[in-house]
Image (cartoon, rainbow, N blue to C red):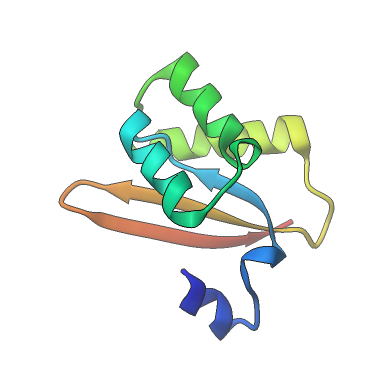
Length: 97
């Protein structure tokens, strides 16, 4: 992730929205810890997990909807959409409002 951001002349401090797929408490906690994210960075992911449960790949879109509905980033704001899937695959999408 850091290498991919650096390729675009960005770093973690340039990311304002963290859209993490809530794959379960253990995975979400590990993602938060490994990326050194604050509780606030993943609060909407925890909300979706608590309220919706694990919805497979659609859960990251539920988190994105909450970001759009509740925090509506300003134009130009960057975010990362992060997901982990079966057999350890991971996806990261850089978004910009």
